[in-house]
Length: 268
Image (cartoon, rainbow, N blue to C red; front, top):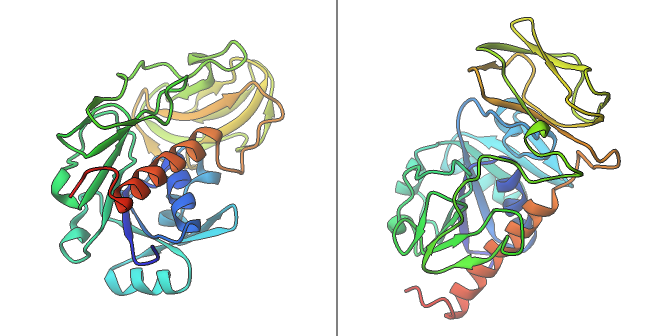
């Protein structure tokens, strides 16, 4: 199992949950990310390594790398390598056993079944048997984490899951194009009406009392309407550990790989 190479497209919080579980299970994991990540849950995203050079989530370290030699060195040091390579060009040099699309772009971003012997895609925008061998349901509810061998995941609702009566209000969006300027940071408790950040001097306010669970990097240039943060109404929420959803999806990816390795998946 230790020689199984898993390449994950994306390094946001959900991809991080997948990578964390596979790394701890003994797989060689490589994360692919864009040069300017727009992650909101920065404290639990290995994408932060692209910005800081190295980061850690729940005692697992990830490091930005520049090529195949640095990828192998990171694996030798039990560190997850993060490569800026959104087009997955590294697959021309590195023979991956498994490729996982965990970008959660909710649309096809160039995933193909011939990228690896086993391909897995998270969420809507993919169809099992076409772009990937397996699709995993990401929508919260009874079927979250279900493996789909034929067909697609539920379509994107455009609305986050309901938490203590709040859904769309939990998401902070940029009121205009410009640079984000923090007033508070992740983990801060806020009251309804508090300014969380500004974009070009236009305030972004809390819509209810809660905790800032995610906030895009300070100074990042963003377009109008982009998700730049989220507020959780649960005061006891933990902003520094992998979420239940990310951990569950990691388990589903692990299940898919083990089924494939045992021959139960039926993928040659």
